[in-house]
Image 1 (cartoon, one colour):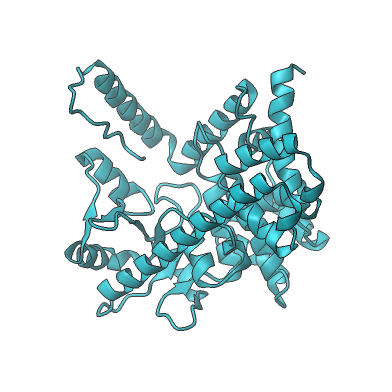
Image 2: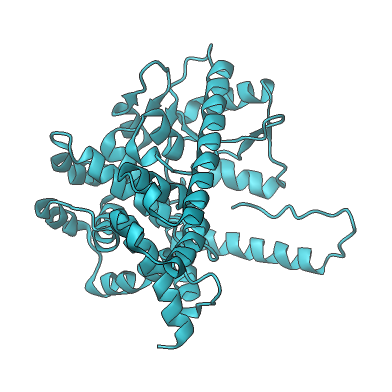
Length: 382
């Protein structure tokens, strides 16, 4: 194996070792710490390492400069979480006289529910789930109370409102915090169609708040959908999403009846395949303990042997960070493969071809168009 590929693999293995055995970090040398800090920062897991070391009371046992980086990351995450809690408070104020069920998703949900996975987790924006029929009233009320729409061209706006699982993001004009309003967890055009009504039926209350969070099984399944049905050709799959899944499995796995209900719930929501992948790679990469009976039952949703082998090769290369100083064409190929897979699952072939053709033509037009000094890039998020 060429040196640059060996170094790239080393970076990913180093981060996995830190996540799996944080108690061993005080024995690491400065060279290992230097690389670990760089890859953990790129994957937004730096504050997570700080939380792990604090739990083991080992922060005083690592190199002082490394501890400073970790503590700085912890402060950034703490500040971000405070901002998001305030944003949720303001959203609830804006919607207080609407009879609408509001469910927090992802990072904000973990934070509001006080789950262990919120410790050291960096959250970017507020993700909420509301019934589809109430989307217009929720959006209008937020627009009246200080939030504003992104500037999108008509095609992108139509793309969100007719095909996607969320409306275009809203951003507060003063705080600039973004809120994503979802009405389902997968696009309307997706091959998998979990019924949103089933999700609302098993939500849990947040003490002292009108907001709710998904039930334990649904929270894990949504994290897996977010992991395996989205992709970025540059970033690849997000390791922090798999860390969320592993944390949630460990936490909820202590509740009576959780494991027995996990696979049946995935089957009910048509999400058996994402659950299968989640259990496989949580165990393989992060050492998550999963009952053999659950793993065997999840096997019923496994793809063909050939697809299993392909995903077993692609996913680790698409999800693990590469060396920050070395290019890795194999990892780049794996990330593109997962990006294309996500689009293939997101839309039927005809619609996908139409969408990609239109986006490609717009990029060509943007490239050929003369750029003035005041021009800005308004490329779509879709």
